[in-house]
Image (tube, rainbow, N blue to C red; front, top):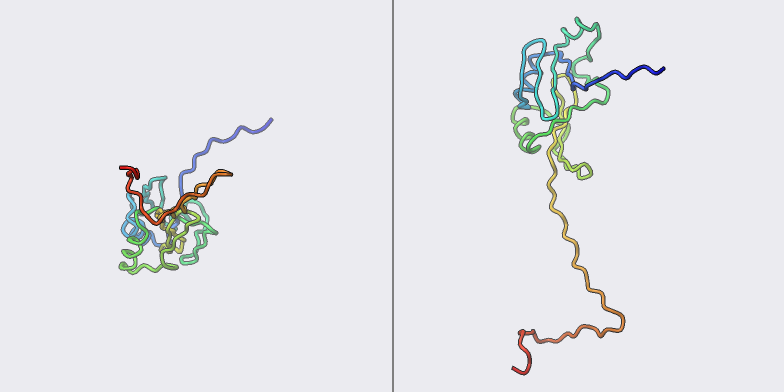
Length: 167
C-alpha cells in the first residue's frame, strides 16, 4: 500500500546571512523590499511570496548545518529573481549607492525581460528584472492577388478626382 502524500506548501527562499545587519540593509534599504524584523529573523514581502533573511549563527545553532562562507555564493545555482518597476532606474540608484554589478542592464527578448545581475552581501546571485517593451515591427503591406484571366490594373499618370468624365 503506497504511503499517503504529505501535504506541502512552498514557503519561499531563505537567505542565511553571515552579517545579518548588512543583509537586512541590502534587502530593505537598497532593494526597497517591504517588511522587516530583527536579528536573527527578518521576513520581506514580495508580490509572489516571502523572502526570509536569517542570521547564520542562529541557523547553525538551531540546525547544526553550516551556511556557505561569505562571498562564495555557495548556493549551487540558486538565483533570487526580483521584479522591479524599472531595471535601469534600479541600476542607476544602486550604482550611486556603491553597489557592484556583474554587467550592465541587458535585454533578454527570448524571456521578454530586461535584467541586471548583482550579488547580495553573502554572495548570492540577485537578478533584477522588468518587462521588456520592444516596439512591434509592422508587417509589410500585402499585395492583392489578381484573379486568373483578369486584366492588370490600369495605371495612368493622372490622379483620379472622383468625378466621372462626363460631368
